[in-house]
Structure formats: structure tokens, C-alpha cells
Length: 213
Image (cartoon, rainbow, N blue to C red):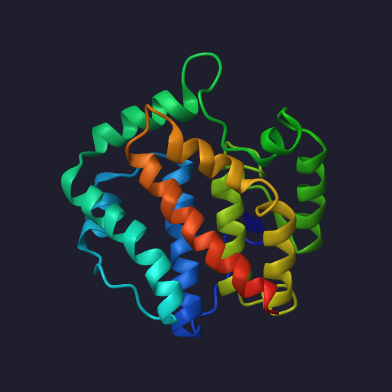
């Protein structure tokens, strides 16, 4: 996603530690869901501390297990293994095995009304699709990237908790549990089972926090 009339998103460098951690995790999930990780990304994940900070103890405990699993997986796996699983599960030959698009889970089809509503929402907050992005905007990676921007962006008229809650509830919360169920129970998945569990735990925490606003 890009800001209209700009080549890249302008991000706020004065975030709180908690918001910085949230934005970073959304950014990491966007990378993992958009494509299999590069060697450099796997090495970076493997070097991360297994202790999650900052955050309250309840949130930390919910994320700790899935986060440790991802760090350990990054230490023990090779990029080719991730690429093979990603290709087989999310791209495939002919029909995809697992879809990562919100429209599919909401309607059973791709490029339906939820995508139109999403594009209207993105236009309202000043974002548009990038020519470098081949996926439609309802791909979970694109949605995570938008959430990262709404947390860390400099435009406070849209980069605030109210917009974060609205976007999360309207375009992620209404369908992602169906995707997580598939990722966590699919017999052919190993790496993205862990990614799915981490994302579910993080989104549960996000949802609970937004409900308190």
C-alpha cells in the first residue's frame, strides 16, 4: 500500500514502545504471508529474543508460546522448506489449496463486494494499491501492512486508535478466524501452522484491546 501522491508510507519515529512492537509484528506478519521468508528474514527472526516485551503480563503470556515456536522454527529450518510449503499451500498449480483473501471467506468467491468496500475504505484514509503489489488489497498481508501504517503513520487524522479499531473490525476480525482454523488444522502445513497460531494470538489481543476503547 502507498499513500496517494507519495512513493512510500511516512511512519512516525516517536512511537511508544508498545505501539512500536505492535507495528513491527504487523509488519513481520505481512512479510511472512505475502511470500516465503528470505534467508535474511529467517536469520533475523532466529536472532530475536524469546522474551516478548513490552506489554502487560496477560498479553505477553498469550504471545509467548507461539512466538517461541516461530523463533525456534527459524533457527531450525531452511528457506527452501518455507518456499516449498508456501508454493504448495498458497499458490499451487491451478486452484490454490488455501486462500489468503478476505473476500473468499466472507462470500466464497474472490473479488466480491467486501473487496469493493475495502477499496473505498482505503481511498477514504488516503491509501491506494501499489504497482509493486501483485495481490488484491484483501490479502491478509496487505491488511496487516495497512494496520502497521495506522499504528505507525504520521498522519494523525487517520493513524489513531479509532481508525485502527474500525479497520481491524471491518476488514480482518470478521473472517480471519476461519483462515486460522485452516492453517492450524491443515495436515500438510508445518511452518504456517505456527505463523497462524502466532497471528491468532496477536489478533485476539488486538481485538480485546479494541473492545475496551
